[in-house]
Image (tube, rainbow, N blue to C red; front, side, top):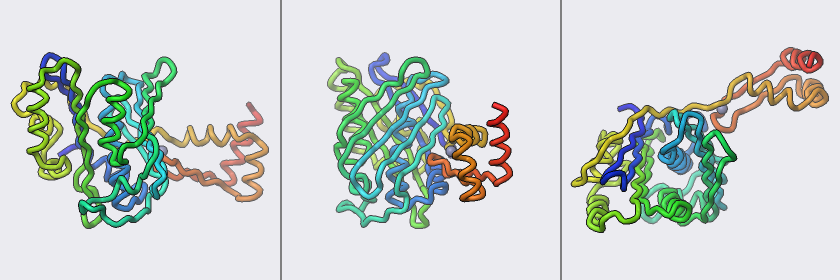
Length: 293
Ligand SMILES: [Zn+2]
């Protein structure tokens, strides 16, 4: 099954749904950052949240989700764009914690108490950032709390990442169902009943359900109109050109200092863990470029 994001509406657009399956994408993040299970789950959930919230973004838009808690994982940042590209990192990827009292990976304990920030950049004006105190640090609940507080739209949010015994990601994905005010009560009851009957979302994904199937399960009994499906992939915006620009921006003195003290330079992209190395000769070439202006 390929990773994809599906959007749908129901009841004449008074319900809008976004569902994603991102198993390969989150496993790519795990491999790049060498995360331990609780960090894999936490980062994966935050990446899923960013992907799900890209609803309505145009070509250049980006959603950035930042979670800053006082737990051992430290900060977690992920962004996703309208093209279905996401990236992210967790400050302390090699954190190991005992399972929580439900026998699950203790994402809430790893994140701790703190704040969730969501930035919506539509590529035109100033980006908008909203924030909310973390409810549990389990991410799903926190996103739901954010949506109620900032957009006054009650939302059902379910996000899950299943990590296997070999530490790989066996299932990852999520769903957000937003219900606009004045939706008939019985519709809400149907969705609530469906949600209470079905298995956890990561189990459903592991069993092979794609985003469309997830939507059908959560909205069983309601007519759904599918709007679009697109692939999602782990992709970072960094490249050698940009890293070179960063080095150049340090200025002549700083680069001369690096050449003298370290010989060369190694720069790691936080978001994707890609390492860019610059030899002494390459740094000297940069100096020539700077002199030329
Ligand atoms: Zn990168």
